Image (cartoon, rainbow, N blue to C red; front, side, top):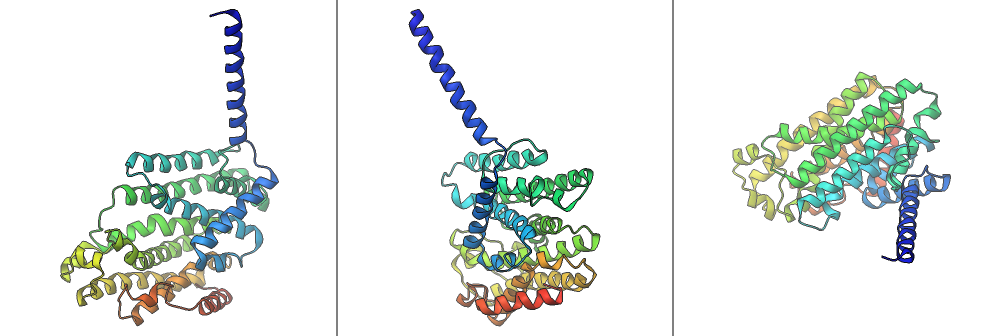
Length: 339
């Protein structure tokens, strides 16, 4: 190699290194005010598009709390949609995606810059920016403790979603369904309560029950779609007891037995919802406003009963109630301090 060629090669390598460094700087730079504004707009659009029913009550929250909850619910949706968005049938691709999110959430453990992703930018701002806990005057030690708890709750949610996508097995019992609901819907409620500055044993107890009610009702509501993918969340134990086959579930064959299985799961959901509502009067006043998804669960369960526990009834596609009734229910429950 000539000296000129060597010099040219060295220059090219230096340019490539500089480009890589610049890219890394962009990917791990502290978000600007414009970045943060764009991030929250992305979160709002994601929630509005994929979770419009919950978007209704979230946008009624006070501004700073609204931004925090939008970031959390966008994270929830992003992880929920991984299984839908990854087109490859290779499990490794899905595993990589979930691991990326684990690593990204871990990067929120301090104030070092993190990957440039709008949801992560919004989550970063909820902890360290204008919408973060620091703006409410909390101490750094309590802030660090709450951040560690938030990362733990996000990890539990990620783990549960990954297992469901990659190693889905029809649950054996209602208790298995409740465990999945606790690891997903309840974790999101804990995060929302923390975002509202609520920290109490009573609130966590209510959120655990409410999360199970929400999770079970969502699994029932989503079963027709999952059946089209040959996935069932109807407990094997109950199906065996009522002589319902997996093919009955997949084909939407609404036998009396399948109605009985649906009734059993819905009864468990309603029991948790009633217990959460019983505890509502013991909660800090700021708690119910971030637990309004319970309103949707109650409306769906009532509509399911009206449909004779036929979860494939077309009237249940939109949750069983009109948009106007849904809005009025949110406002009424908010005024009463319940959900």
